[in-house]
Length: 153
Image (cartoon, rainbow, N blue to C red; front, top):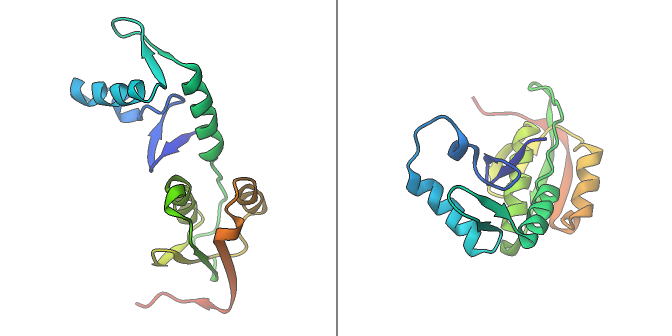
């Protein structure tokens, strides 16, 4: 299972993969990420290069794992775009809004406006069920188009 946070691949602890890669990133960048997690009480420093997850961190990352659930549905790139999805997800749930937009992109939807997207229908059933589980069903409206949306050349 792959975890993402704001479009960046992260490990189980929420540390971006680019901080763990072979690329030569500054120590300051890594220290800043670890320091922020420590300030939030998610991890604790137990000595030189020894970081441990706190109970608060375990609960937080379990929650993140649930919220960041990934769906991989292979929509055909040439499938007709006959579904309009409109959403108004509150600012207090900005992470879920970002997650939702990322999945619309995965499902081959196109953004018409910031919160109006058009793509193939129907949305996957397990995806719709998950939206209900996390309480976003009332923030999202779907409309089936009579004719498929055509891109202007």
